[in-house]
Length: 363
Image (cartoon, rainbow, N blue to C red; front, top):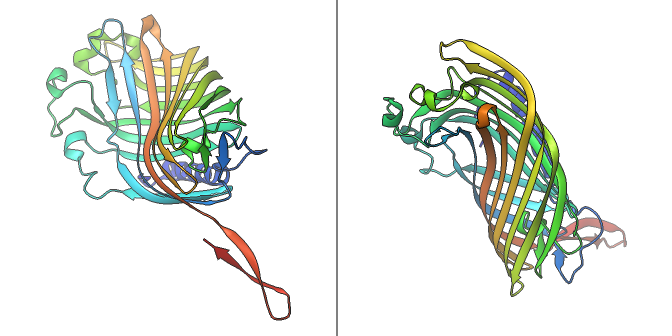
């Protein structure tokens, strides 16, 4: 669930998140054109699809250098949610809350305050990811406190001052959209009957910003990372084309395994404020190349009435900085879905005078 402090910035983010959620509700299960080849895909977008789910959303930051013993990895304290949802034609609504007793681990990972809005829009011809995140408070998962020379009350080293904000969109066109459905695995309103795959062609746009009170490279590790990674603040804007492939393996019509990989590259505009060895700030503006990787996977059971499955969705964005240094970040989600579909028909009831009266819903 979104969690943010009061103030102009968070209120603006909440407005954008609401708009993103509305777009998701209006487009997520849109059939998107002509019907499927029914020998391969059954379209159930005109049935009422109800779901119970358990999910978690996440992101991380990663810094690497040729001379470093290992990369530095920052992660937020993620939460696990459960919820209920429903889809019918062009409308999808999901409501989730935290699972009691599973998210009380601040003494281990520290506290993360966050706003996290992600939408996965799947039509017949297109698969689109939208995301907007603001996280404050991270822990370092790659190193221990003794390795960094830190003493804190938490089990892992934490950076409560580290804030990151990102927004972006990635979309791909499903070339073989008559016989292959993304919706079957990821929106549960279709059924892939036979194995099939498709070429994917699209593009992406992302913006990432981070800031901290001091360099994201701890002092004890500073000698292993060059000045270009001594980031205190930074902004990265990326755009480019992408291409990939997706495939669903179907066993006995009902059991499926879906996977897709999309890779892209393009222009990256960068503004970074780094910290020099004497503590002075250095601002660098420039352009370069960035890369983008999108990975989706799903597995489970599907039929006309029931669906049970696990889905995984992740976006990775990275940059090559000075002297072969690497900086990357990721955003994603994991979800378990239990789904039941119902027929939803409206029939007019005639009154004694033969005129149509109120409509009756049949489940």
